[in-house]
Amino acid sequence: MQTRNALLVLTAFCSACNVMPVAPARTPASMFGMLAAHNQVRTRLGLKPLSWSPQLAAYAQDWSAYLASSRGCRMIHRQEAGKDYRQYGENLFWASPEYWSDGTLSLQPVSAAQVADDWAGERQHYHYGSNSCRPGKQCGHYTQMIWRSTTRVGCGMSFCPDYGQVWVCSYDPPGNWIGERPY
Image: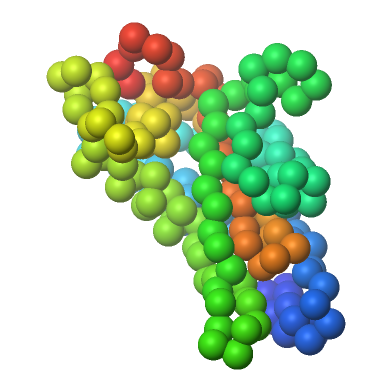
């Protein structure tokens, strides 16, 4: 609670000076809603629950920090080869800042569970029979969450200079293999 209060005070102070605080790495406790939301979706399908991986959380946190600080908070997946080689499955989420009528910006209150629930909401766009998304819709975040062979997840979040947020979850083993069903 002290860390949260300190972050809120720092955020309020930095709002006045237009400098964004650096987000601390998310601990397993602060990401509990993320893991619980993933496992709730998997349980409904009779799939084994995922376990939390500190290694994957650090990997995801590194990428979210990179996107927030060096890539203008753009949603960019790690590449499949090269310097930023993607070793794991990956889900990304961006939250915009809150815009106030007086022109100020602030952090939008977004929880880990809300991020996972947003991805899980893509379920309505996934058709198991054809193993595809509805035309013009996304469902890959959902299918990564429910990929049968995936056993571990770790996530991170960073604040962007404009008060946006970028969330990253990494999955091992990765899913979303073309031509394969998630379960």
